[in-house]
Length: 429
Image (tube, rainbow, N blue to C red):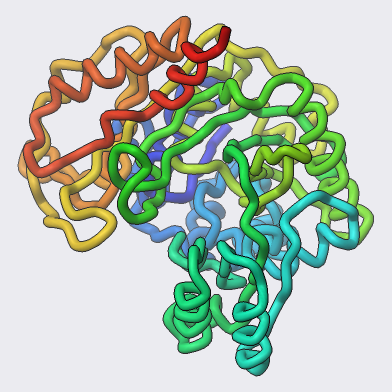
């Protein structure tokens, strides 16, 4: 089977790593890929947003299955175009991708389907004054969200009325482009966040595991929000009883509702959850794997992921079963100093060759390029150092031991990934 992966980050490296291990995959391409992905796949210089060029590439190379990593090409309708061309694709149509593309759509959908989520109000730019009035009278903290995709910068947790008003001004002034033409203002939910992943073929659902990530840039959950500085899987806070509620109250009604409303969901459904005193509530949906969550979920999977992806695309998940390796996984993101603000590009990374072949250790690349025999950092999040172990503590120790052997003075990482979960375990009687 000839397979094309779309994207260039650590998530796409994890996808390529999984697919390269499958005996079903005879040829693997990635567009555009990165320096690490090039070890497993042929990298083709086509950007993820170039929908027509990707369809042409899939036709020319007689691709049997396309896996779409990032959200933007899904929202732009890449899967629709591929299917129209007779090419199987793993991912939702543009209509189904509205679950991520429009927070307002998802809020209205959840209300219609009785899915537990934060209470909210939706305002368009023409209703800016009404939105400000609502903020002045609503209890704080509040969460102000740009409706559309805003590169992870469109969600503000406002501790004060002034901060919430400033977030409204940012959105309605055009800072996020069209993504901010509509805003969702919702109550702040108390609890612990966790992530749940499901494979969906339009009707059937397979539990694809859990994870928890660390969004803030610095130790102790301080500093600005980022795309993610580390993650671990499974998430111990999601026990069997809670997972049963997530499936019954959130995921199953979503998949059933999307099908009944004529937009069946196929691909990865990623539920961002808040575990409140009243039970799990949906924070948001993503319609693709998380990054860096993919880097800890996929290495634990024992089932052939190529087989799962093909069954999902063909609507026959009922024929498959999931098996897991009895391991915990933890990944630490190494980022360029200055990220998520301005950071230098072209700095050299040394020492990765000393880690090659180590058992239960995987280095996923996110923002790298090879040039004249050197490995260079060319992005904000650059490497995902993933350790595996019989326990979370073992996986964590393995990841940090590897990081200590990487020579990259211009890089940094958090040193407390997974620590909260370990301290919680120690505190239990």
